[in-house]
Length: 121
Length: 107
Image (tube, rainbow over all chains, first blue to last red; front, side, top):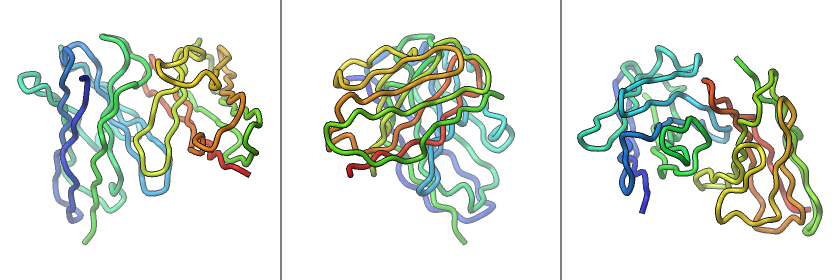
């Protein structure tokens, strides 16, 4: 079964750093783009960026460029989303997702279960 | 960056009604458009990709059309289980922007 399994919920304080993960299984992880999507409380979906595990090519939304880092560890089929200076406004559910086809920069048909990140003093 | 404008932001319709949601891109995006359904408390689900291709397992009452800048998601006969928020998304060239969503309710 093709699936993306994300790390568990996090509660952090402003200014702290955080890395959440997304592990793929059931497919050739290396050749499928992996994307990250933010959903703030009661709000819509926001595309943050994507990474191609094979060569770590990364594309960011201008809204998130410089605010987060997307990376990957091919040896354990895992993608990461990292913050170095969390803000209360980072409180959201974060989803990882994968397109339908290998190497295809297209629509996400496989989604992780989401990671809730709460940033509060 | 290309902006995606969805309308309406919400709608209320009766069971069996035909429902149409539109999505307009600020520049042409060929057919690189997807539609997603997100039910409350759930993960988004892909309904349609390449503007009009139905994702496997999605009921045939859902259909998509359009190309260039104007796109439509149609539910031919609204069912109670279709209560959800629907999002369009452009892809292929970054950023893969989502529309702001359309909340669909049963009247």
